[in-house]
Length: 97
Image (cartoon, rainbow, N blue to C red; front, side):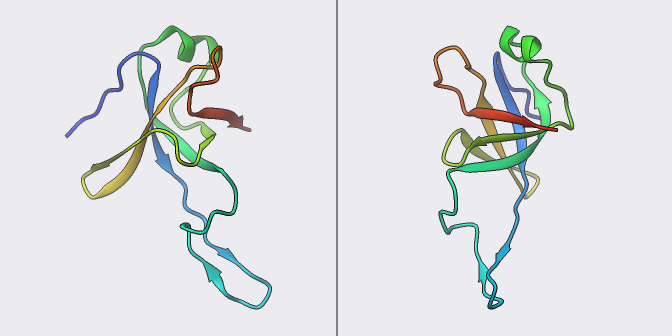
């Protein structure tokens, strides 16, 4: 199955990082460490806002942890995120450089 986001949406593959405490306890990603998450852009929609930001496939972005829509493709987990910087209703927070 191919997914092509519509408009100012993008498909992101979440980057899961396990956090280990000083005593060696692994905290699962379900622990609310922060309310942001990191992922890599896989596919971009054709919206003007995405063009203006200069986003491209392969870039890493920070997004709202509970934002977007979860989807599965070929057994892999992805997020469909919205880019709306003007009204702060979008899921994207920053580009990681």
